[in-house]
Length: 402
Image (tube, rainbow, N blue to C red):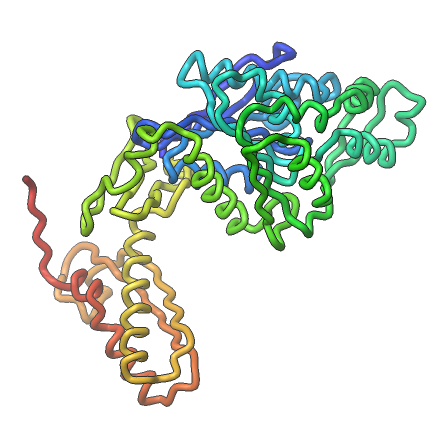
């Protein structure tokens, strides 16, 4: 998964910091992501959604609004309108340098921003909101509760999510002037509303208002027990996969044809980019990524090759144990396999045939859970040691080239 750090001029002339992640193939579409109020492009949920969308074939641009994260500018000089203008500036940059965004995604206040920015980005084919407010007045009220002096002063400092920000009255005035629901009637593209009923920051009632105000086609999906910031990675990945499946309906058929039935069964294709170490691994029905850690020059967008190797061995052990236990009718409830890899000197390995240099050592610890007898556990251990991947790793391997 190629990942690039970029900058472009924002609405207030400050250079905005961005990251563009793309699949190694031509993307299905470019997506533009707007993060929540005072958040950044590097919020864990934003990264998880972007990475998973990239795995699904989308290119994703995420950026820091003026004065936030790594972007330049003064946050106190910005407001909701300038955030919308920053989104349009990001779309203009993508159009000029790559391809215009067809999918707009907004989280929390960023969701309200993409709803209003869509009409100014003509290539937009679909818009999705995550935990978005149906108006901006609730944020204004929250800021006043946090800093009552704003009702009389031109500026004040407020503490938000443990950080202090200086805000000016212009932000409150701008939030008061916006009418998101009224302008939603003019949204002429499909809309997906994603919201958790247990969201304690933006109540789910906002999702109903957005849905009611928008025209068809529109869809709503409940995020069950997810929190507002999607702090559980599985929630963020679920959102991304849902976005990919839903938005594909509104893209040209030829744009999505290459993501299905392209790789023959039994074949694995690995593609690396022009720069960096990130690669995309694809089978007939699955995609995953591999990379190197940041400290060796990678971007840590996926497991490294040795971690994937250990994962393959561990998966084979667990599957083999399950197959055998099921065939015998044994009460195996779960198999947990922990693996680690390192290299040791051959002279330190009493059981190795190699006598010089380094040898690879894989430590495997297997835990069989369930009401099993000692004899059953011992037999499962024997079976696990003979799993197909283990036999492959310990036998002679021949590689061929066409």
